[in-house]
Image 1 (cartoon, rainbow, N blue to C red):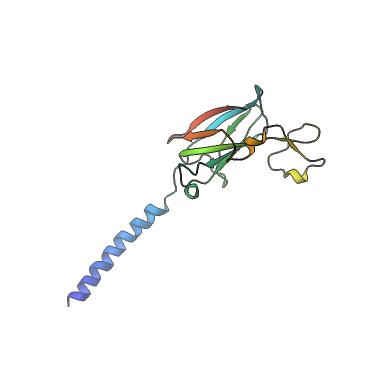
Image 2: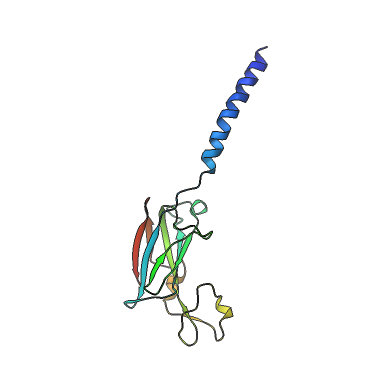
Length: 152
């Protein structure tokens, strides 16, 4: 009866190895803090959206996802994952910036759609900064995190 013994050994191996494999695959990738400041013409930008997109030439975008932050009164930002967790995976990212003002020149709150603003919005930044494909700005996030200042 070698077949049942072989089957039992296979089953035992499967019971030991499969949970180990699944636990290893299901682990959450570490997120590292990314902070910095954004200035425009030497002054802090308040309410500027800073968006990090994986640099598809250097990392697997599906595994990395993207992150974003919004500058405070001093132009400081902290990147978070879209689900709210602070930080982002290590790797190289393209950085895009969005800074819209209403018809009176007031910054548009980051969670407001441009179509919802009476009189419309305009960007104070050069258009090249609004897209990861045209923005010249990048950031390398090492294990442990990083900080970078942008002067646009």
